[in-house]
Amino acid sequence: MDIGRPKKIFIVEDDELQGSVLRDRIVRDIPHHVNVFKTGEDCLKHMDHCPDVIVMDYHLNSNVKDAKTGIEILEVLKKTYPDVHVIMMSSQERYSVALQSIQKGAEQYIIKDGDAIEKISQMVNEL
Image 1: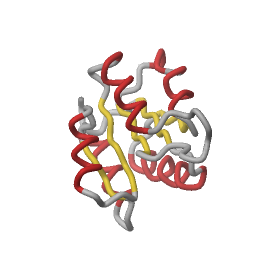
Image 2: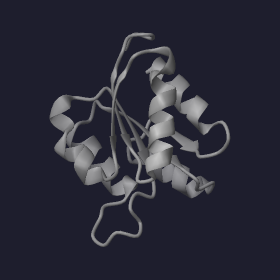
Image 3: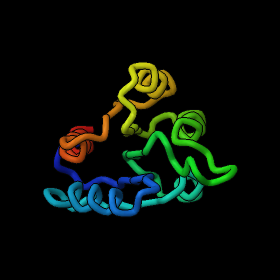
């Protein structure tokens, strides 16, 4: 992918504020086309839009019955769309969670901390 070229980006984040802040930061320097989804299922329904990058929360809708987690959506994405770039993000600092994400096909695992939004924006532009 060309650095600096606008990309189609999906953000899958059940925290509406965090999704909006991340979207606003990602488009600040380059006018990417960004869609924000609150569930992984909504993301999957729109894969016909062929996103270049998906930024996804590890713990999606943990309080919603029968909703898939981020790691479950990641598995579906990588089986069905193996070439899509996925960046997994979470407040989980456990090594096992990061390792699981990478083993399931995420290109990066970012811990949600004070620098996370800036790191994600930089990675999106580099993919």
